[in-house]
Amino acid sequence: MDVAAVNEIATSQAVWAIACLLIAFGAFRYLINKNDKLMNRAEEREDKLMDHLERSNESQEKTAIALEGINRNITVLEGRMDRMEKHTYKKSEKDDE
Image 1 (tube, rainbow, N blue to C red):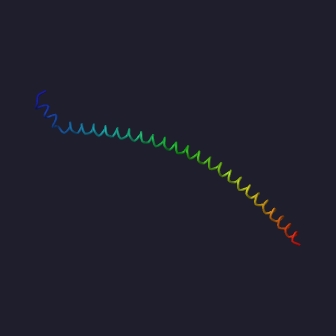
Image 2: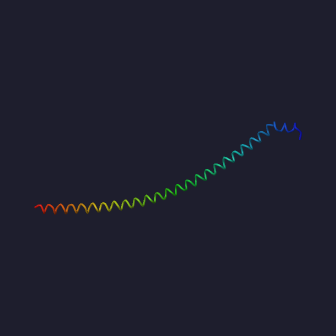
Image 3: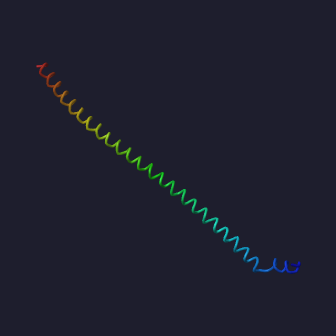
């Protein structure tokens, strides 16, 4: 090939158009690949968050059950204290008479 032919090919718009298309195609493939990786990471992150949320919900349910038991025990204790106070008050009134 002589210099004139190489010069003509280098200055040809078709060659530059093909080069630009190849670069654009490569960039497009790179971006799609990168987006796929990001989507996979996002899905993994979401799965981990959902697992954590489920464990948190189970823990909160156990805490709620425990609090209900404590509430029942406090109610029973309040009733016993009320009966003891009434009994003690009645006894002190009888002693005062």
